[in-house]
Amino acid sequence: MAASILQRCLFPVQTFSKCVNYRLSVRRCLLSSAYTDTALWEQRQKDPQDLGQLASLMDRTYERKFPVSSLVIGRFIDTLSSREEVDKAEYYLYKFRHSPNCWYLRDWSVHSWFRQCLKHGARDKALYTLKNKVQFGMFPDDFTFNLLIDSFIKDKDFKGACSVVEEVMLQEAFERLSTQILSLHALSKYLATKPELSWQEERIMGASLMLVGLKQENSVGFSARLLGLALIGKVELSRGIHAVFHQMPLMWTSGYLARALALINTVCCDFTHVKLSQEVLDCVEKILQDLSEIPDGQISANDSDEEDHLQRLRLPEYMKLFKELKDRLVAQDQTDPRSLESLVSDLTRDTLAACEESDLAQYRQTLCDWEAERHQLIQRERETKERLSKQRVGAAQ
Image 1 (cartoon, rainbow, N blue to C red):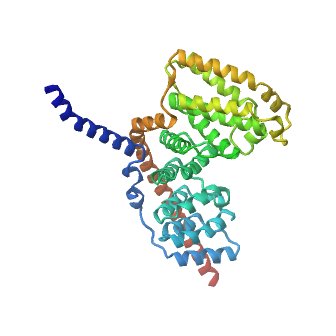
Image 2: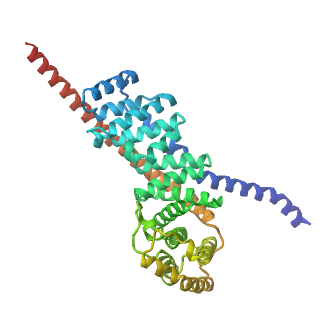
């Protein structure tokens, strides 16, 4: 009787505890307010300007066939104060990118552009200029990438977040741990929605999963890498190896499915502490089955490479080897019933807080470096104006 009463009393407490833990887990899956806070950025020394005058100055400069300085375009970006002004700024970014000074767009100006887009509800414009980075010169740093990915994730726009991750992948910018975690979070969340992917999207998702997975030697990293290799292997066998590496940071050597199986074997032999997601293993098995059911006539006629044909001939061998390796994983208790999404959520909860502290410390230092460089440029600009003024006075006399 007493035990029964105690159990009833403890039940609400246990339920509340679970709810609290769940909320903390969800909250920890995103960047903290301290990370996304604009206070550090806004504390920079201000340089008040009139947007119309800056635009007029740039127009006159371009008309005279002179280059616009990086300071002028930087001030223009910093002065934006509305969505309408952000939209109009696209023209001047394009003009600067196609001018002789295109190489001198400063890192702080790129960072400022994306912050302005997020601030004024122009995230679509941020993504557009990012996807067309060659035309606009927008190559963000890791911290800026994180802000963009987090912004999409918080609005549960996981497809948009994956579009940013694609750009991280193309720039091979997975060096920062926080970027790895946010990218894995976006990828796993989007895949959990079971989207219908085109072969181009499968290639992008596969490359992103594989490259970010290379940075993590744990269950998340190996599971992501395995799924990535399998998706790329699917594209290879259905479209040919040329479709895989075209405009992608991927090897042009055939055999991505073979690499996926070699990865499983490596886990079995050398990383016995690692468990692969059962969900990912099921996905790999389905990919192999789907490929074996594709008639030869449906394979892309654009890729008649002999190596592509040999890879298709090896498909039954791959199927057999996969089943053997899967049985071995089960026998060694190296399968994890959790999904990739769940594994990533746990990794995020356990590591993201520590990442934020180091990122913010590095960001503060970066801001100091940017300000020092900006002041040097302002001083050089001032000296140049004084020299030109003296020359004009001398010429008039």
